[in-house]
Amino acid sequence: MKELAKISSWKYSKFLSNKRYNFSRKQVLKHLSKQFIDKAYNKISKWKGYSPTPLIKLNKLNKNLKLKNIFYKDESKRFHLKSFKALGGAYAVEDISKGKKNIVISSATAGNHGRSVAWGAQRLGLDCRIFVSQYVSETRVKEIEKFGATVTKVKGDYESSLNECIRQTKKNKWHIVQDVSNKNYKYVPQLTMAGYSIMIKEISKQTNQYITHVFLQAGVGGMAAGSVAGIARYFKRIPKIIVVEPKEAACVLKSIEAKKIKKIKIKKESIMGGMSCNEMSLVPWNILNKSTNHCITIDDSKVSNTIAMLAKAKFSNKKITGGECATPGIISLIAACNDKKIKNLLELNEKSNVLVMGCEGNADATLYNKLLSQGLKKI
Ligand SMILES: Cc1ncc(COP(=O)(O)O)c(C=O)c1O
Image (cartoon, rainbow, N blue to C red; front, side, top):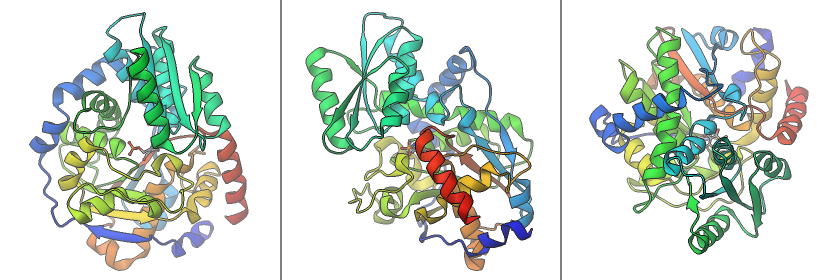
């Protein structure tokens, strides 16, 4: 394993154990019900082109870390959208449009959610207006426009784009599809999370090994919470749940630490753009605050290495296209294993079946190519 020698120096930034951990299937499914979860699977699994995304064994990395198995869920193959987000926004569009053809769908997005919404609207022949901040790349804008949506760039950050989207939605009587929930807006985000839980349903059929550890990356927490709900619904045994975030955008860690939703100030945007969020969404908080065992944060320094190592089949026998947000599970798993105390605490050993989520492929091809070439020089 000479090739993987360099990973022995990889480190995490912060580690936190959740003192209030108390997993309860009933509690989790109170916030995202079995009915929501089952309906999402029944609908989406009938879509044209649906098939489960691959569950790949990272056998080379596994040999190095001396675990039983490492499973990588490869969402680069999710429909043709190259990200798990295809399961969320598009499904929410289908549900709320209820077969009507004369409505306009709107959304604000940092990228992947908007693509999913635009694709969902196009599938049903609906008009779609997407709002993005000035920081969203041209590549991502073009990817959304490919699905027939009209994209408006708004000066300022994500919040400015959301405010403008809400303003125009009210004025024009459009139908907004957001993936972030609050006290007064839960139903649509719950639909998106129910869509994400399909990843877990698929995994439960793709291996007969009991998963012992799940590393779930988080932005506002929708993906992590949707996955936890899937675990509560489909897994016979509850694995250890570890939430991973960029160190500058650790809103889940900070909230768990503070025992309430904590808004943070992002001083530096992470390269893992989809995860660079400053405040958790409400439903994810309700699900994650007691079902998360541990939180880990990482910096950006190993993102490009990981992208290159996935592409060059250094972790498995297969070449994998994993974008920036597909890397945190692998990085934090390696970093946890490099710290003996944490490795023992997490009980990461030869009996462990670890699941990491390869959330996206080259969804932003320009950024992917840049990071890949940077990474190739480092590995
Ligand atoms: C591409 C991408 N966008 C966004 C996110 C964050 O999802 P959420 O905001 O639901 O936590 C992830 C995963 O963490 C991701 O891989």
